Length: 213
Image: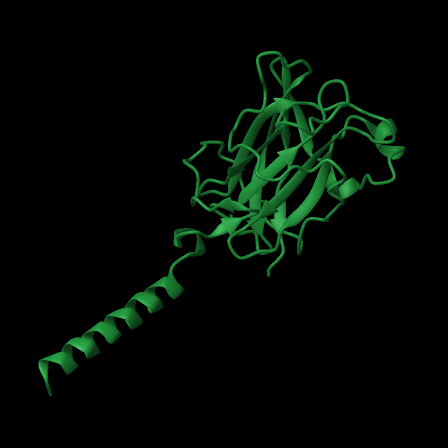
């Protein structure tokens, strides 16, 4: 066997090893992988929220229409409030989970909602943003409570995707607006968040369960 043959065999073996390693690596570790069009960056730093996962999960959170005002490729950020923000402060948080209740670390969650006058910003990114979940599958946005507009009860739009799940598109509602909720044909009871007072604002929680691919 010549030195050239040995070198060629070693090179082929090395390439095979690299390919096998790439196949075994988590998706978020692969260069150029994307979720909802965003380059996957892996789990966020620990948010320290300490949310306990539910004991049981459904096969998946109900999907709902995205509506006409979705804007892709929003800024990655935790705070959607701005210096001139009006409206009641809301901390919107929760977990992104697999159908078996495992936390989905590094999942992307993208939210958008109308402003304190019932208008959507369709030219910029006011009250729009995305983030990646931490190792516990947790997310938290600092925003405001959106208000009612013609034909719709207040709601928050959401898109979420894990490393190996399809995109979930849905809407989340508020439990203290029963009359407005009842008059909205898109509203669904199983998409209502848990809501508590928090200082001069609100703290809302909703856990998103993503179905398997």
